[in-house]
Image (tube, rainbow over the protein chains, first blue to last red):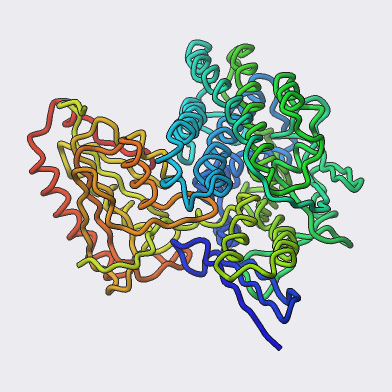
Length: 431
Length: 170
């Protein structure tokens, strides 16, 4: 009888914030436990008793990489509680803001976190020595995304210009036109990124995912759409809780989301692409065909290609939105008067998958209850299944190699786990 | 080449909601009110974007929380000059680069300031909403005094520097 335990403290900055434990007995995988610290629970409690209109700014602080996603889900949920729909130029500005976030978030993951795995480097620093041009491309794309965020959001970190009903201030046509050369350059870099990603060497893997994403009638999903899945689910997004539930697991503060009556599911770029390929902007669709990207990607390691394609799609869509922009008459729409209290829920597509918010709001506008289900907790159970399969295929690897392989498998899904803190985990002494 | 007119830059990084992890932010906010001759940035976001702020600076000072096993409130100081590797271990995560990694990446790409100083304050409590510990609050005053002295020693403020203090995230 032999027992092996492999531990991966892959968020080295914060021990215990995110870690993985795999226990093997003989040649079978006994346990796979992905441990994640999840900040939304704290924010849900913090929101109770606050003015609902504060929710977009408060929840934006959950993540330094995808604050727009939190702002968008919060705005839509609160507007839905008030029976308000925001359309026209304001709707398009929100979509443009989301494009900026997808570009910066995906570029970071592709070049600085994921690409080193395929090129045989321990990290982006070592990769930059031999692949400076690629790393510079990643930083340039990231900067382009941040430029969009800064112009529309007021700043790239935790944008301050978003409010329920729209924006505090909207850009003039001239201001928005300043993005054209930035986005045109980014589009070129994004095409290079897709070709770079598709040429990487990928390990063989095939997973039987249930993909879940939004699907909108006429556009690749960001802010709007029904909830759909690759196994036949289709329902209005505000009914999320009828189809999905969160369960507590003893080893993680993050709740595991599951399909009610079903199992794990996957959200994020692979799911969006599988369920919305036909709705990609024309250039992105053509590029996908040109590089031979399969219609449904089931090898999680190839998620980097889909992510790259979404960067291209976001640049293309952002340019379209900028070109057709006419400033709205007012920067925001007022909430209707006479609110008697109510509940609103909304789902939007964060870079790493669907993000659900629900707010129960009292007649005085204060939040009675908030619920936030981030994409990472939805993917957590599914990532564990990926890991279980990977370990079963890799039992002959020595522990260090197995540990590395597991870390890479987690990284396939860009989990949002280490944005909770920023402190350095030091192992050398300096006085 | 750095422009002689660019003032020193002080960047405080961290997370407000995570107890002592917000120490860098506190230092930066206080400096924004008190120091002249430097630009000040409070940074709660992803860290690689900081490299855009470094270019052309004669001096950048970063203040962050650290954990090395020393008593909480201990103040560390590192200085990088001449292109040598940064004396902090690189760390890897699945979703973002650590400050040490970002600084090393900046060095690799030639994007750092001429002089780079990092102040690290040893953390104690990190629970959500736990606020700053007493030891870290004491350390804030020490870091403020030392950073203020370093900014002063970097030279008289240029006309631009005297009016450019501000925060990216207040």
